[in-house]
Length: 455
Image 1 (cartoon, rainbow, N blue to C red):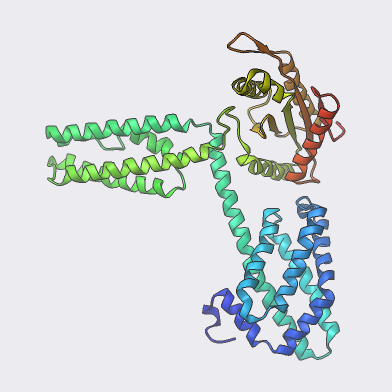
Image 2 (cartoon, rainbow, N blue to C red):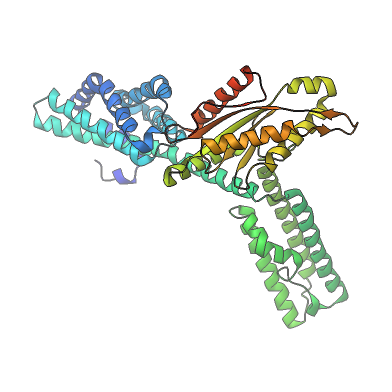
């Protein structure tokens, strides 16, 4: 190791480690990996499947088809790649890490799996040579390369975590139910009102009457509501800073009773900048609000994964089941063909209203597809999920939609229900509900089916 080793980038550190390790030691590792690589992969996933927290995120088909080959390629790459290709090597580590991060397998479990791989390869090294110096050198090289690889893998976890945090925060804002467009128009209007009043005082030469932003209706909204709504954005911090600076100058002018000659120009520039920042941060929130379906006003699929993953975490932590319901409007195409798409839109809104009237405030409704709705029923065992789905089906079947033409449309639903019981993940859960819905359609529609046995 060179004196400057600790100042190098991880890529250059890995490259130096490879170059400084004797060729026969690296060749020894390649032989061991060739011999023991498949066994290491088997041990890794065997450990994960036996670990309760990891097993629920793993699908055997995904492991066999995608993850096993990638993990073997990962192990082989560490010891078969030369120092001139460390960039490609690091990219592979990130890809392997991304697979496990996307499945949200906890990092401590991945570390445990890597530990098992290390132990298996160490045993292979001991069996491959009796030279103690070579054994020590090979084990040191093995540990160093594994450690470097994990540094790159953990980057994928960091990216995945930050995306989840951003998505969770965006979902929090959407779930508050704010009408962002109305809020935007209202607050731009109140800020404009403060601006007009400030310039009026300047024109009249009444510095003692100059209002601070904090005292205005906009300022009160910003302090008690806006900053919470804008939390975490660069624009919010800039707005807060500029408001403080401007209010400090206005307070000084009121106390001195003198309006500096350059203040009107300075005020105009500050108002222009604040107007721009306020508009920009509201545009960001409007993008977040797109998490709702514009027609039915229920959630769209943008936050579905976030909601289900949060419920899985809660269910595992508190040992409480939750249920998933997928509802499909029967013969929706015929409704569109007979009455037109505008009536089809009315039907979708009508169905969304019926669903909303028959679930709890703590449940989540999504428009899952064209005429499909998905409901996440929190803390609801299978029996409750079935009862809720049947309640919605009956309510819809018994209440016709009266159109503006006074025609009436009778709508029915088919539904599939499943329950999270700790043995599956989000994709399998949705797949189970889809299978149940498919059975409901095949059995004649206007019915609710489950793939489980109600208890």
